[in-house]
Amino acid sequence: MHKPDLAALAADIKQWGEQLGFNQLGITDTDLQQAEQHLENWLDQGFHGEMDYMQRHGKKRSRPEYLQPGTIRIISVRMDYLPETTDNIQASLDDPAAAFISRYALGRDYHKLMRGRLQKLAEKIQAATGPFGYRAFVDSAPVLEKALAEKAGLGWIGKHSNVIHRKAGSWFFLGEIFTDLPLPIDPPATNHCGVCTACLDICPTQAIVAPYQVDARRCVSYLTIELHGPIPEPLRPLIGNRIYGCDDCQLVCPWNRFARLTAEPDFHPRQRLNRQQLLGVFAWTEAEFLAKTEGSAIRRIGYLRWLRNIAVALGNAPYSPDIVTALAEKLDYPSALVREHVRWALRQQTAD
Image 1 (cartoon, rainbow, N blue to C red):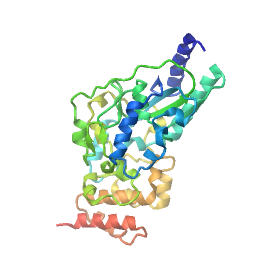
Image 2 (image 1 turned 120 degrees about the vertical axis):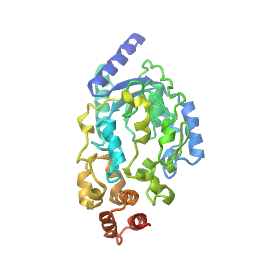
Image 3 (image 1 turned 60 degrees about the vertical axis):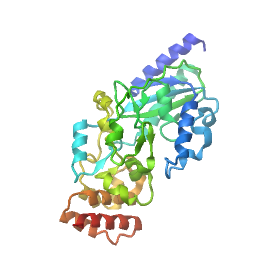
Image 4 (image 1 turned 180 degrees about the horizontal axis):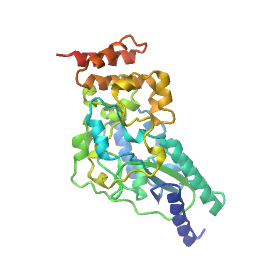
């Protein structure tokens, strides 16, 4: 295809993307040298903790053509997911009896939804160009999605490591299509964090150890989602009522005053997951947990880590006879992981 045709195709792709529900689409090349160095430095410091998959694939993560041979362009997309006002989110976080779940996980699992939309976009492109090489990704392979989004103009990587858009904040998911089409590329986004350190200051576990440097081993999202074993005791009191993920750094970011509520119904809360109480979810059986998290990203942690996380949150709550009773009922739980956190929570509840 000639350059004018490719430019027209790129414009069509962006229009098709919007029609499919994506809030923005950008195109970039595969040069990620700077991001590769940043990743290697991060791994060298051990900030990835038990996330071995961050280093398992060698250079595939930072060199897209290694992952999908023939790739010369990346189509990067974002989809807004903010399901409710930040005032409501903050109210839930401030209520020690509430079971706080990161807002990205309240609705349908974004992986399947976005991958399906990306596949439809690829089919529209193929209808216009004929067969072409491509592969779609949504947080499902070794891809430096944030660096690609920044290069494609979707926003800049903030000091908390999330991507921020000047007119949309940071409450959005990312996805990509790797392609062999020589499409014109978009200018990269520029950084507008300035001297602001709000995200560093608010982090409950001080996991943002320096601007643009997150020690995942201290991050609440890592501790409640990625970590399979016991949560380190010194960090447990800092987790508060957060039982799945953490949104503090996004809630405090001044650019999120421009964020809009999602127009995607599938990202709206299911099973009143934004209104659950700790004692209520702690009482769920495994069957109830599986039923109420069906189609949700929450399922990935499994029932035992779900109980582990809630036990910690109950230990952090103000003293309550009902909490003591609920914890005592699980003192002999079959899982050693659950028992350990229940015992800790009971000590917290009954301490003078």
